[in-house]
Length: 336
Image (cartoon, rainbow, N blue to C red; front, side):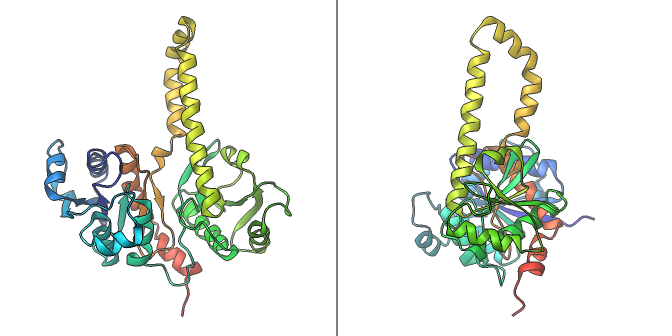
């Protein structure tokens, strides 16, 4: 019998909680028998939501967590003071080995702080990056870091490249993934002090397939499988990516509805367009894992709907089965 993977889910984190988070958890256990979900939050609230659904009762458990860490709260202070919050309790379930992973659409700051303070880094990992998968014309790319380390050092970015390569090969099935350094030009001498020094380190790193600098405009075309940068640039890239995608879809819909002829054409191309846009939606690829921790922590968008919550939970199964932490530990971990 296949081993069950237990995922702790912050049921009250995010803009659409608990409705979408609970729905996403139910969808995950219905789709995958090897998943068990522990929903964290006020028990009466979660119980009321679960009454809407039919699901395998043995695959969902409620863990009462009466406190909620709000997005605007100071992360360090809230982690220390709100011990009965869904985020803190979820992190401890991972730390104590009671759950294999923790998924939250709640406060990004609290998730990042809790991941490092409670779950803890693998010995030898300098900084854990947030690593979302983004769609491209050639499939997907892994962008790291997109929010955890604004003031990174060249050595941090080299570790990001190595961890990203492990993730893309093991989880996404990309053999010998191409690693690109996000920069303002493709030439070797371009960029600031950080990117120039990082370029030379990546160039001499035999463990990865470094393909050089990648400009932001080339990212959607899939020139690299692993995109390395510090969190300030990564977050700008990610948010711009999402914003342009949303604006473009809005303009396409407006154009399709502008005349009778365009409306008829829209009906004809609707199935193909829907299929294409589904593959280019970030919701389909789950959340962003915080790589380099002793346990798996996944941060999803604050505006996540059930499909992203569900995919984030299912993503944890692959992460566990492919032994990503063990591979990162083996390649980058310190033996001291």
